[in-house]
Image 1 (tube, each protein chain N blue to C red):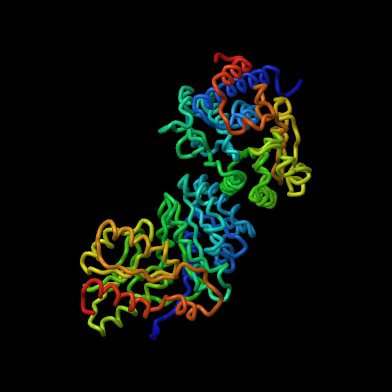
Image 2: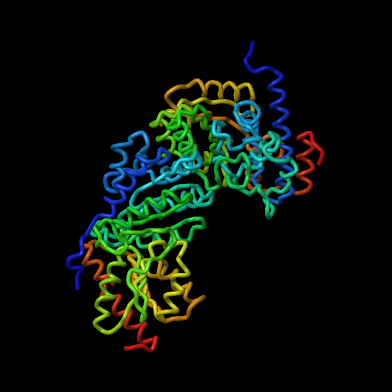
Length: 320
Length: 278
């Protein structure tokens, strides 16, 4: 099973484009980098607006607190680095300097998850969503593809308050159905269905759609939800889908113990008792390898989603 | 004729004494807090709020105000007392320190307290926040100044030096740091915990104009702030040699009063020494 003719595009390129446009439209946009501006593509903004871009060097702690100071003075700040260095390395700076005073800082990271590939476990952070989700006042966004990344960046720029937005390094399949609209805090139904709900976030949304197509052949009609805002979770959409389909599978390129699936599980436990299963990275560190090989090894394929669907369908007492 | 009159000095000394009395009472009533580092920081804070800073208590978010960031957030009782005496909020409110529902949190909260410019408490972040504020001023071509007080122990923090490097790289002459060099940190004398000397040379090496003063001598404090304002092309750090617990004999230089409230007897003794009513 593969993604056939799906076009693959770079989230980083779309983020860079959105940021550049924001820079042209709004004088209050200031961008911070930490010696990775060419990798995270803030270099595109820096080239046109050198006076509004500060590269602080390999000093992420300094970057986050500087971002706080700029935001306290009315700037809309985008601080960007790799996900591993933009969350775990600076958790306390984000917590005290940004989230606690609810400052208008957007932490936009790339190279999240195991699709980083060859760099290995040190760079493949699989717990960043958990860290950011734990913080009061923080909004957490994981766009599904490149066009949605563009829309999400525009939306978080309009929102006043701290945001964590994560993307991967690798190009990701573009999903036609998510291109039109993006509303912060809203899950979107990409495919209707009544038998089971597949909830994906980030790169796993495309896998959910592929799995749903395959499941049709078995007579299983799967609904697919794109949960691109993980905090605040779109509880209404989640509960509605759980009640209408009676079974839920979540899929994320993140530790399965503490990510989107865990958030969904908690909500379902309290609000809608339906069989559910989480697809994601087990409670382990990653390793070097090719992105697709790693996705397969760590259980992040459409096949894994199909297997999980079979499991919840069995428990639901459905067709299988 | 000296620029700073005897009258001004006497007034600042009087304000500092008021701040010291407030903070001892506040910490005593709260039953917890950090008297030692609050007392060492008091004179510099008094000089800032009653002479140096261009602020408007009636309009705390006035865009052109000078900013003060207390990176050593645990010394906030001194800051709160100065803000109240300056008119940012009622003096009676000082007695709510650390109590439930209070605007005066155990460590500074910029969302709750009028006049508080940054939320601090986890050490080592305030200078970076000050850089952000100074950069914003530079971008907006505003002429206000940014002052950041750094605790002696914060010289241990890597982030302090990340910030020190960046501030001189960005040529932030609108930024002035004050090191409250009371020679102590929670666990004991800085020279035993993590030796900082030669501290002035370190800051110089990081590209700062360095001024070393007696942080309890108002003439020296005011002169240093004047000098800092005249320095162009680089930030200035004032290393203010201070005494932890300054003004209360049994707290002076005492490690035990870093983070401990006085008991009733100690409170009464302290207030008498500070010329107040227990």
